[in-house]
Image (cartoon, rainbow, N blue to C red; front, top):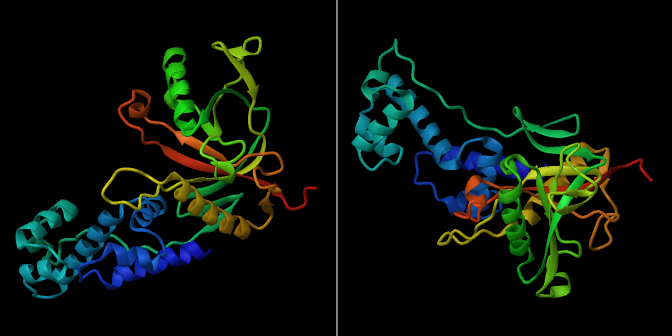
Length: 313
């Protein structure tokens, strides 16, 4: 997969420049993406923030140099871009649990954080990286949902507001519910300022009572096969906290499409310009307690792409 190759190229660049002041823009450029997108994608697939990975690699190699030579601590500190020996010693002790001078002793073992190399394995319809499933296939049948709709220039905000108010009033397990959203005609179709957005919450078995759930009409939910992946959120403007959901979704969909080709036995459902054989691509919303209580607008996302088996009619 091309994106895996790009990530490995970026990690190689980092490894080759651990003794230099690393420029995040050059690292991201190696992976052909923005700084913020690279940082989020790295954290997503590596399970560790980029800055922490760089720090751990530097301190691992620093310990090896101290043990294998008589180089001065101050020289090692400068070699690995620390502003002072004191700053280096603090970081070294925090990581290794021992001082640099103690790490020189033959009987003392320092920690070692390995060089990362991203490799994937396809297993039971999942893209596995290490022990982590980064992309999976899920089949949905007989799902039932309640819906909250918005129409206008910010239909997502309208739907979110309706759902949040209703959920806080009528459910106690809202943090654990599966929540999805989609734009039936696409986001801003034909360049229009206004469009429709539908937010849905999945119901558990036997929650529906006479076609309703807490005064909301219950409807059929999504069905069929979906390719599902987390979405590392894009933020090209480092001076603000605003995120670019659209760019994030587009870049994630490209990665997912490449992954789908690797899996081999599935393909995207037929796309007519707005939906896939009558099914929409879906954004799953992972909402925090802060989002529900109104102190934060941030949430995490997963992207669902409708797919089908290649031998399906």
